[in-house]
Length: 147
Image 1 (tube, rainbow, N blue to C red):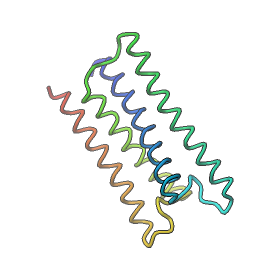
Image 2 (image 1 turned 45 degrees about the vertical axis):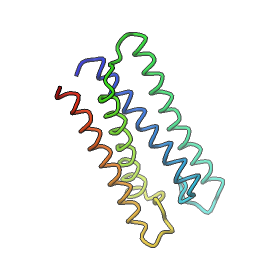
Image 3 (image 1 turned 180 degrees about the horizontal axis):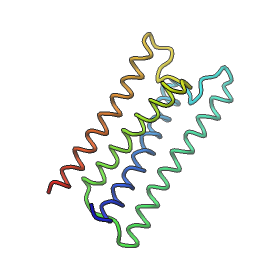
Image 4 (image 1 turned 90 degrees about the vertical axis):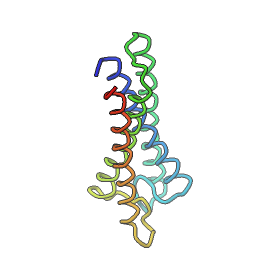
């Protein structure tokens, strides 16, 4: 992969991480209110950790956008939507896999839907979606590199 496409892919990866983090925070933390970043009887702690979570993934979105702009200004940004979209999907799926494995299973700071009848089913579905996104991302990216 040439430098321009590598830069495009990395930007997509960063933006994908930020995008799925933002979707997770907006949908699961705020709209559905299924969980907070840290489950605690202290609502102030829950809201504070959600705010840190949102700040982190907002920073990734800004970083990805700035990286795109900087690479484009130096004429070092590829033009392939397949490379970029592949990066978005792989980044987003990686968010689900890393966040799901670390937070839901290793650290056990929260579950996707802790009050569900079968919370493990929600956790495993979250991981399966992440794996599916990564696979789709590699398939899209491969379409470009096989041309």
